[in-house]
Image 1 (cartoon, rainbow, N blue to C red):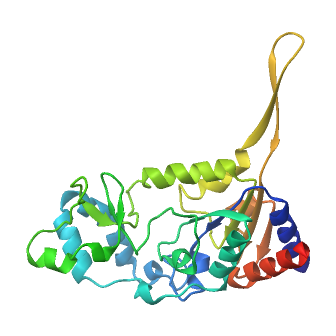
Image 2 (tube, rainbow, N blue to C red):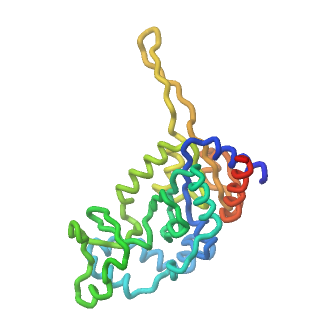
Length: 281
């Protein structure tokens, strides 16, 4: 374990453009339940999962009804506003402040990376801390709309003050496309990176799970002309991919990642940060 942590620290220090992909494993360490684990929300309540799969269809057909259910129904994830970042979130912030980590792309909707202070953050599946216009993709804070008043006056759904598009929660529902701005920026980060930390994700939810595979397929190309005038291309891998997960994933099995450090992100990431500090002395 110590050798792998030092190896990861060296790889980070030698990187030019390192990014991190994070998943539910980081959130569970802050006490936020996952969905499909042994004690997951949907494992315990299959009907909640079935309802979640129908949610976006309901929104498209009757956004007022969708909002009314949202404002009056139970929150299956509990009070996320009271959840706090853990040591793993803070370690990524330290790597960013040190100029090593350039961007965090997260599956998590809990807003904990934002709370921890991550500056360059792409929330692939949205955030519970925001609302989003489905037309122009502008984001808003919930307090910018008096949702309870709009409901009492029969004026739901809320409308974007700039384009009059319908506003929904920023979180991406089943059947809803990843917002184009986030999808495009995430691909740009993946194409630019030469090191990717994959932290606490099982890598089975798509299209997010494609991002490490896209990174692995990235190549730098050297073009030259052969004597016959034909172009030839030499290519080689240009990215280091490191997994930090509680157990191996499909990325491990498929050889997408270069190596895996098994354990909790809240324990391993701070150790990597300390190793980076020692190597820099």
